[in-house]
Length: 357
Image (cartoon, rainbow, N blue to C red):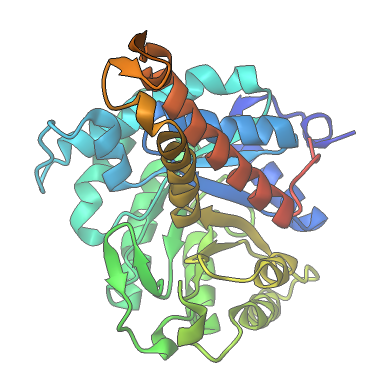
């Protein structure tokens, strides 16, 4: 018996209590769910296929830039309204909600890093979500702001989404390296790691707001540098200390009373991911690696078939031979989906999430 039966969760996009049950189950069983950044229907399909073939849950998430791309690069995206990013995220949500059930896997539908300057994007998505269920959760990322302002502002947003039983992931600490246009490569290493006192501040502030969870209704993001050579400490070791600190403050018997998210993992060893998972990480963001994986499929196809892709008619088989079967987007786009799918399956296996349904 797998989690679908044990937790009584149906395939497709899940919300509220079902998200809590899935995260709690993952933490107890010792696996994490990869969160795949999507930018198109094609990347959605690649991730869903991987989950289906691996019999695993999946998290699909759109960044502000990815959502704008989903809407189309010609759509205006003003700083005060974020029109393209709002419309693109909503369009992606409708598509995923429609297609996910046929893949037979539970899907958490999430939006990624929302910095202070992008809050109009979050506002637009929350307003739309109030009209009908769309997203399982959102991420608000005010990690570059003062800690107390970060927590207070996150609490205000959690009060807005709590009646919809949406989760709100927030970030304490700064992701090293570069992610979706946010560059922290020059940040001092000591600033890259979440402090246990800050995690407790988040926990104690947010736990009373949301009816979704009796403990921590928002995922506290534990961030690590995207370049492992920039730090001499081991981030996953700190996670155990953070859990112990929260356990002590709560007087809890649970050794892992809170949920963690692993950001900035490109370049991290599999052992680092697995160690972090053992300390309560239930979500691992995957973006850079899947972008590269998608390109590999397209690149290799074009390289292999280059003599068939120079003209519509005419190739090594003859001057009058058509090339349509080679340049049809359904052919070369599919090659990108295949290689991206394989990379997502690799992540699912590395995170112990295979055959859990």
